[in-house]
Length: 401
Image (cartoon, rainbow, N blue to C red; front, side, top):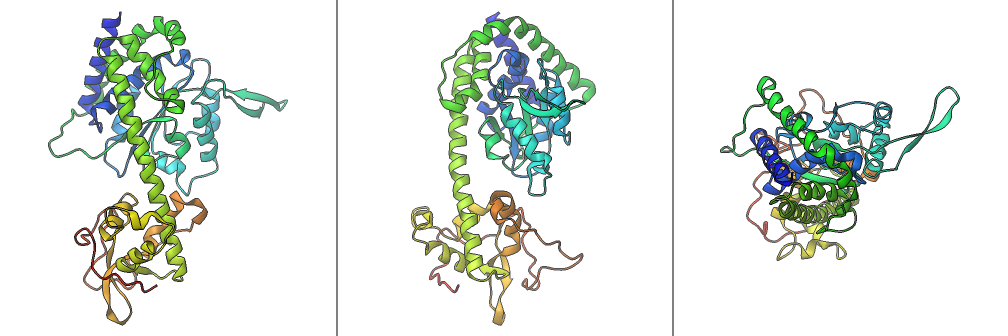
């Protein structure tokens, strides 16, 4: 049975890799084990989320969900399903939730239902965390189960409380030489469904054994809770999978720890930039030189120690790149032209990452050009990064705030 399981996981791993390019071999291992774990979720104490996130469109998130839909246990694909529907579908044998376009659910313009869904996804990570609602003609308090495996795809990171309960796949656009097989329902679905049926046949009789297993974990606390179902699958399969699963667990949790540290740093940067704009009475733009100088003058901030010689224009551009913020040519008073950061370009990032600083981004007038931009020099596309000179930035920074 162990050999059969290892071979089956190998086949599933190969099938997934034919249709999507995942960010690493460890991510491919994790996705394979997560799919298999959905078939024993009734035996599990924790239901790890699979966060499929990317910085931009076109990175393969939806294709990942297509593959998952044909291989997981009882898939329920949703883009805009209400929490009330999900409450009523989850039961003793819950479906596997597949949530696409999560950035539209948890973004700054999301409805009140998004907080209910966030709570459902948080609670559903652990067994016996029901959601209580008043229900029925007698208006009785009724517990609704929340425990279910869930894969959630979106642009940008999901809420921290979900990411903390997730195995994270950070998708990127494919390189020119990377090829995948086109996903054609007529050919792809039968192949993937056959693997799904084999997984169910292999793991169905092993649910009792899985429920009793307490595997040795290479991580602790919530990371151990999240990865334990995947390691259980690997131990049931045997062969090279137990070692491979634990190696993937270590590599991916360490990577996310680095991401968390960088994310905290970037959020601090957004807040500091908001403060600097406010102190300057919120001008339409601040030159890169002035912004860097102002950041360096804060003795309590980490910017003077950033890099080998402190924050510079190059570092600033790199830190802001994930927020789709880049410098542009800007004409200041008296005809002075310089690289600058336009305040309006920060509004969306402030709204998403610093909710207490939320401002409504103004709708641009149709056909109107950005105010005071240098003539003949259009602003950089939000997703791009203009060259801002070599590391170290321009010499002789002078604060003019």
